Image (tube, rainbow, N blue to C red):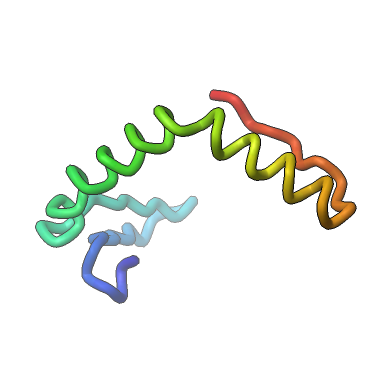
Length: 69
């Protein structure tokens, strides 16, 4: 993300090394879009999980663990 101009990375030459990250103006410009994607995902989570379960059954895959925060 740093090479794409989305993140500013600052390295401090200390021991132990310290690194700070912050969003650039370009990175901040995408925040509203990402919030929209997050809201959409939360609203459609039951459908997404049903699709995953159907895929697992169809392909014989082991069900994937779901991380809940």
